[in-house]
Length: 106
Image (cartoon, rainbow, N blue to C red; front, side, top):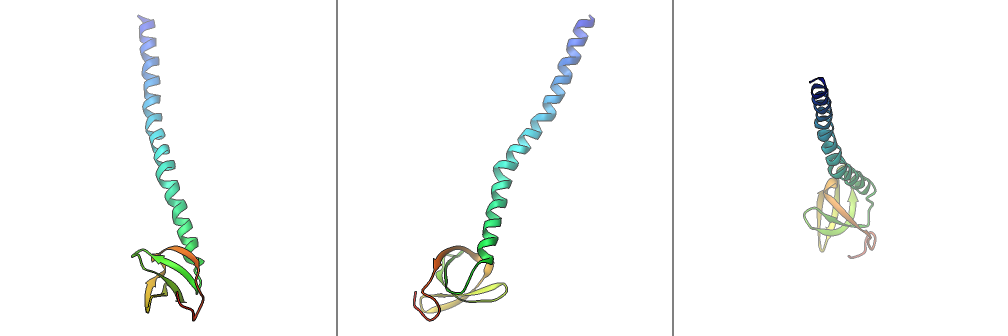
């Protein structure tokens, strides 16, 4: 009788440890699959936005492609074709490299 009680107590203890570790393992997996890559992508975007310069060719979140003609605190002027538009700096999603420079045509 004591042996059965001892085995039951051991099985219950092991089971409670497993039920504690399993949710932690799931949280760790979600952290490394979802949160870490998202933070890395956010950091890369912040570096991109802070490194923008006049003359860079960029793509906006709305799909506009053009060349930066002016930069202010939170906005940039982008020349696309014959028009110039003002875009929030955070809406720049991609930099295609250097343009033709100020005064040149895209």
